[in-house]
Image 1 (cartoon, rainbow over the protein chains, first blue to last red):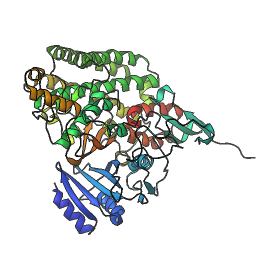
Image 2: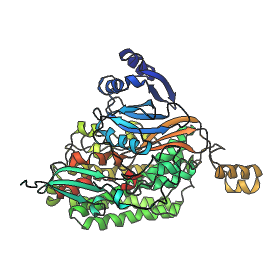
Image 3: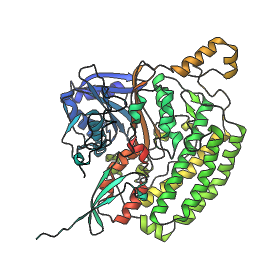
Image 4: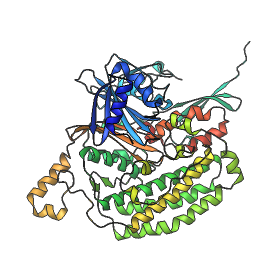
Length: 166
Length: 390
């Protein structure tokens, strides 16, 4: 079984400069990936035999409001063969467009839509980027830290003319 | 003049066979589904947003409302994630009680699944039997915690209280009775020719594709991948128990059914071992910042009173860090990603809902099948909308 530092070493050998920073917290390896290398690194983690992260468990978005860049995307990967978990993090600015991972893992589809809906991060090459948990003419992104807890339009009247029906 | 060849049919959100408020827009050619588009979000309560303004303990009842058919499992996932963030490990006795509670919850979840799944397909008898047995677990829950469906019995750093001899007695009774009941379910369905015709070769998915779609839990094991977090990355003393992971072959509705039916027996084996080998000892972690002092200590000692007040009003403060932890839910891998920023509230809590990912694969599973098969496919992946919409 590969040790965390071996994983880092192997990644650095295949894609030098792709890892910005790595941390180990509570025995779990978390890596911050350089924006330019992000699609290549994910492809490497999925296809390279030594890694073989075949299960994309989840994508979580975090809003760190005063910080620059503002958002963080967290990809939780799992390798069934090696029985190992890896957390890949990507820093994203509000105007950035992140390449969609749906062409590597189909399971990225809905989590990316959720991040788009609740945090307002855009993805490129996503097959169907629509709001998923809130309704279609909802304004704002609820999981941003500047979105009020009780909501923005809780007293707004319902207007059937502006609703798009699919 | 062009002739309309396809028809669009709206199924749900009120349709009883969509297991909640799932809405499917089906494009049909005759009775064959060409394209299915699931629409979710009608039960969205913003649990992740609400949790950001709550203390760590206050979030526990919210997690009950995710997968309300197997509530204790959600408690377990959440509490273990927070404990991982705080860096504490709960005592052995507490872990065993948690295992008993969560395996009972898994059986409860599977009860609802097989009952409604069979009811959707047309075998109406079964739901009466499963709900009879589900009632026994609900009574056990009520006896222990006061709540039937959503026990909220787990706490950060342990469980709410120690179990009583009555609890042990009723669990033993259930363990003794239940194998006969499972035998009964099997008699009604497994060799039933109508059931086989309705479920075999329906909604098949290969192992590779299921992994790519992010399947976990019984739905993935039905395709032949033996991935169960209880075995892969054991948590909460699961490595103490002797149990097997049932695996299917074809990945169709029937195999997913067989896997879950066998899980009844395996869960029962775990409960049996846990209740017979229950270790003695404390039920709360020995950490003054996390566990409440005992009641008699509070009446005598002022510092214990202050400590209790601080824990109740403020709660344990998390270190700065981010953790992911997952447990084997009754539907699949239930994970929590919690970001701690040094305060007593989670900075961000992300729930990895197994049903959410399973539902995203519905267009692939439904494509090319008849409308009647759509019902059995939706039943076979066992979704609960409370968990999808959060």
